[in-house]
Amino acid sequence: MRLDAHQHFWQFDPLRDAWITEEMAVIQRDFLPEDLQPLLEDKGIDGCVAVQADQSLAETDFLLSLANKHDFIRGVVGWVDLRSDQLSADLERYTEQVVFKGVRHILQAEPDDFMTDLAFMAGVKKLADFGLTYDVLVHQGQLEETLQFIDQLPEMPLVVDHIAKPQIKEASFDHWAKYMKAIAERKHVTVKLSGLVTEADWKNWKREDFTPYIDFCLEHFGPERLMYGSDWPVCLLAGSYSGIYDLLQSHISQLSDTEQGHIMGGTAAKFYSLSQY
Image (cartoon, rainbow, N blue to C red; front, side):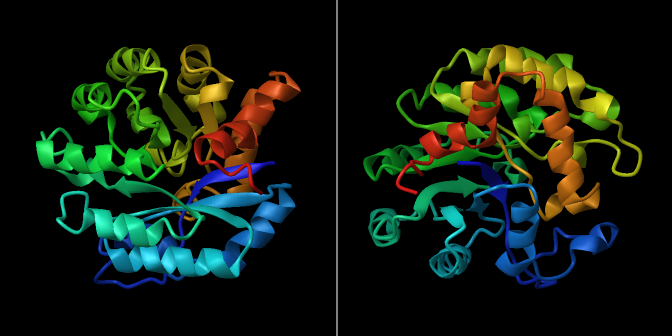
């Protein structure tokens, strides 16, 4: 099974989606399953994992409603308030739907010490009681705290989104690599090869800009702990769906069919328990 392990849907709201600035006008519109499905089919991808882009229960309900109408949406990573007194009730309600696979919070926008706050950590730990995963969305400046966060969750299935957002445009590498090497030693952590182009120069990136980052992930995590994600439609800021797919394919083409299979679906299917499909 070939999977896109990271993409988004939304009905654009200029107030709710204020993070989509005028510089990002190309994604200031609705993006729905009818827009994505032909792109997946064109590349022979069987399904996707829809990931939250707004921090509300309404967002989770929205994604689940789409998944219930479109079989190619194989999993949903939603949002719940991990510090809420109602957390257990929310998780009980959502896990009644088999397509609900995990939770994400937009940690990249939070202040220092947020992710290691005891109340937040307790909420993340509770996800494991419900058989859920957690997507870690951070940028490279948060990696020291991210490592502390990960070490408090030794039994929790974790995946780092967008390879922790290194500053590819500036060719910044050493700080990112130092902490990602340490994270790679934590065997319960996987990584999404996603979101790369939006950390590069949107208009002038070259394939070789990404080589050291992808090579590093292959060396330290290995194909069985890596998964392809398009980050569509955010990727449209710096290219096309086809271009993003081809970028990764060109890089992993030297791997064996088995290794490519892990990255292009096998790892995601195992991590998000999608084998029933």
